[in-house]
Amino acid sequence: MLAIIPSLFWLGIYLKEDRREPEPRSLLTKLFLGGILAGLAGLIIEGAAVYIFFDPAFFYQEINPALTEAESSNLWESIIIYVLIAPLVEEFVKYAAIKKIGFPSKYFNQIVDGVIYAVTVALGFALFENFLYFGGYLSEGIYSLLAIFVLRMFMSTLLHTLSTGWMGYWMGKAKFNVALRKKFILVGFGVAVVIHAIFNFLMITGMLFYAVLVLVVVSALFFERIRSADTQMFWFPNKK
Image (cartoon, rainbow, N blue to C red; front, top):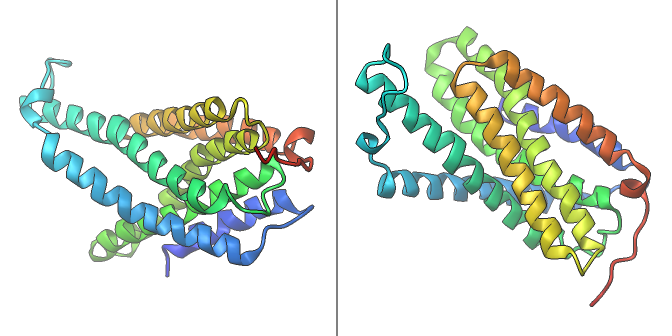
């Protein structure tokens, strides 16, 4: 029950940005479910990658004389997993869901629609992720559970909407520009991965203030962009 609250909260916020022509609930439901499946796919792929390729000894380096070998190894493990592997895998599976379900939709006639499709997928993904996190904290007591709930709701879940939302913005631009479609999609994917990776790096290295600052700055730029005239205008996609 707790896992769905952050997703519904942020979905309500973002849907207000598409008031001129709201997307069909049936399509949003498919995108949301696609995001949940993307979460499952991401978990499997990340788990398999770590199991097959990860060698803790390979990542040990003397980056800080104060760190023991085990501590240094753990830090580098976290960086490789959460800064390199996770952003690439998670943004790719979310992209795949958007491309499969949202991109071909006949209702896709504004750039902001790409944002809404991406955010909806991201929130389905976040629900799956939050379910796992909250389940792990059930035995830790109510205060630990509430702390992780607040952290996931206002930071991690928001992060998913912003990183993937930016990808959706560029996919929206790609929808209406056949000549630059591949370039725009690649740019969108790259932006999503970079935002995701920076946030994860700041979190695992304990720089909470800067992680919050990144969310504030990215949010401000993002909402300014999706409220712009070209993002909100109606386009007629090239059918070639």
